[in-house]
Length: 560
Image (cartoon, rainbow, N blue to C red):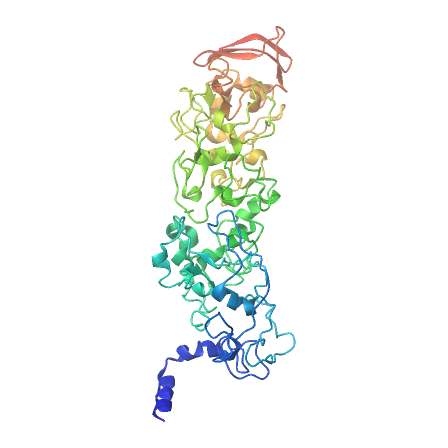
């Protein structure tokens, strides 16, 4: 009697949540009193579906009472996992005896007669906890704790997330099947992915926007967090992109198997303030939609199969909103792999151009947009500071006399690739859209209009990109070249006919013939009557041309 009274007093004075969130009021209560849809028609005992004091399964432990699954599972795999899992063992195999949906919920060892359930609810075959036999899209289990890489020390992580007696990660590392106080039977409150980062320790995560942003979803479909009750980016943490069970993509457990969909579901102006997704719908854009499943973290940064995905340019575990000064990379590119000016892989990159050189340097393929006297598609070579001329992306340009530059630009200035290649609605173009070369309505992902067709009538808009940095009044006032106005306005010759906007490699050109970005468009310019086609620099603001253009034979034409 004394024992019964003591138990009653304990129950009376327990905090309300301690009893309400116990196994009795959780979905693991499969008895007639259970709160979930899966519950017995006849059995009122709570523990019997998993445990029995007599007649338990041999060599299992925990007095196991449920029928075992004989399924062969498809297990998780990726190029970065340290130990590929075999078939589930230990407590994970016990959990799967219900959660793989192949054994009836009422299939117990004692009593020998199966416990009755309603038709259609006798197997766990639907809902988030129905894992099936394909575990390739679930967090790997029955594996040792990783000994290297971006993980917390095992002794630290396993204080709250225990390994089994064989030292393996199991379902019970993250879940306590008897305690649902944290929801989903989690061993810890996972707000802001507190449980995930107990083991996973990605470099830079604590300061990245995905871990700190207070941005919320504005309610416009689609819901970026359909399986979460959290309302901010920071609170969702890892689960902004990853799903521990039934993920859309197997390797790395992403929500969607279509890589960009994991990013654009938030970066569409309905969570993140800038609508990057719309830029990818523009006529010219980085073609993230052309490949699926090609990108891999272990790929060769230079010789990988041709593709582009958001994560080729952005590291979601490290990206921040910090700004930088050219040529340094901004926080948006933090933690990304690049290729240096010398053609070497750098991890992480430090200069913005190192990112561009990954795809537009030594791995470049295809034809140049303009048929030039000197053809080159490797931008790493085009921007080399030793070149006879180039736009100042890696270092200040070779020309010390450029009167057309608009302040604050000087001949000592360095510019970004994204000063020319960027969104036409972004801040560089005077708009409010996202920065960066995601998409543009101008060819070649240019931020502003730049006509290259011969016969273009000059005005302030046709060469808006050039006039962003170079004064139109200076150019047409012939301050550096006395025939600029004659060519551009009189003959309707575009800038592109004479000037190669990136630069001329020192391996192909020289300071005499290729100063001032001179590299002729051979669809417009041809050899002169003597068979010569070249430009010669003869000093500051002086030179001579040997060519034929627009019916004029330069043999040579000398200026000034």
